[in-house]
Amino acid sequence: MTTDLPTAAGRGTVRRLAGTLHRRPRLRLALLLTAPLLWLAVLYLGSLAVLFVSAFWTTDSFTSQVVKVWSTDNFHALFTTPVFRQVILRSVGVALAVTALCAVIAFPVAFYTARVARPKWRPLLVVAILTPLWASYLVKVYAWRLILSEGGLADWMLAPFGLSGPGYGLAATVLTLTYLWLPYMILPIHTALEQLPANLLDASADLGARPGRTFRSVVLPMVLPSVAAGSVFTFSLSLGDYITVQIVGGKTQLIGNLVYSNIELNLPMAAALGTVPVAVIVLYLLAIRRTGALNSL
Image 1: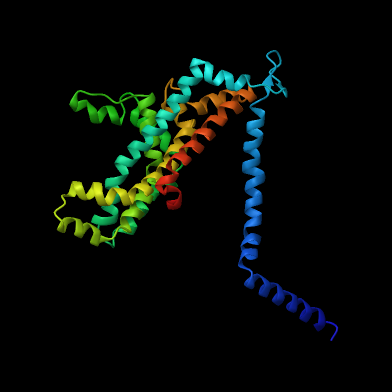
Image 2: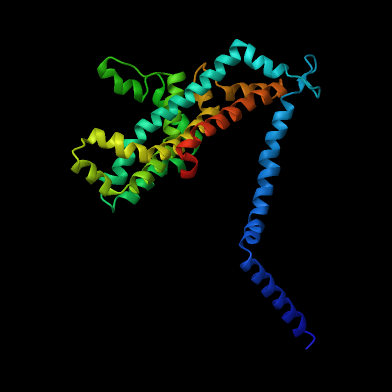
């Protein structure tokens, strides 16, 4: 009897707790999300807060030690130094160019995989699109370095036309980043096209609309949120990348390179530079929020 009582009492407690959680779904949801949200707040948001605070510190020019004295000199230098302004604008331009190229390439690919290919082949095509994501980041970037090198595959393919490859530089950086992040644009567009009702396309054709008009008036408005959702990944990943430009960018400098080069010499300046991509991405998210892209993520 003495051994069974604690067991029965424990079972009763578990049942009462389970009943309470069953009757109160909000409490159950809160208990489930407390740990991950706490982890997010402490590690991610906490690190961003430390980054922002340290951007207001300074560095001793003689010892290169961080001096915890509040100053806005770092942010003033960001907007008054021509080099910093050029690098920031170049980084945003690269991110926008990669996003635009990904959208242009992804749409026909996604349309084929979602609407043209036979249903039995569609899962295999999706797996084929995802396959490059399983390969190492560095392997893919160095593969493009070989392709774009002097006498490489790009030069060999363009030689019959009297042309040569772009070599290393800004164009090589855009091409490589487009290849790296293209699957992130294809998948949301594929999902949107797959869910597009076929009767809408048939109705548009019955009303006399040509394929171009159907695309502009029917397909594009319904797929645009998914395109914007994919652009969140392509834009943010391209804006914060610094390894690709080091490998195939030649002498090109992006904001990630400046952050990396200033970590050891001037940590507060590196922190100030690091706040720029965060601020740009926040503004970008606010700009596309009205398209419904955040609901498509």
